[in-house]
Image (cartoon, rainbow, N blue to C red; front, side, top):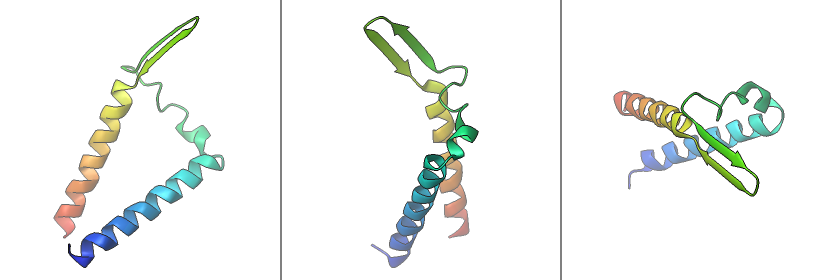
Length: 75
């Protein structure tokens, strides 16, 4: 593997850790809409709970695809 790939993994890992710390220490109120998008399926009944975040996962997929496209364009 190329050393540049290792650097990319470290940078992505640090970015993910910073995002996690942001959400953990109070930034979560800014992301309260996430997981409650139109298209996310939620069924709650006594003794049964089903949650299928279709729209949220589609949004994450689009964002990650955009990030990877930008990374490939810059390298």
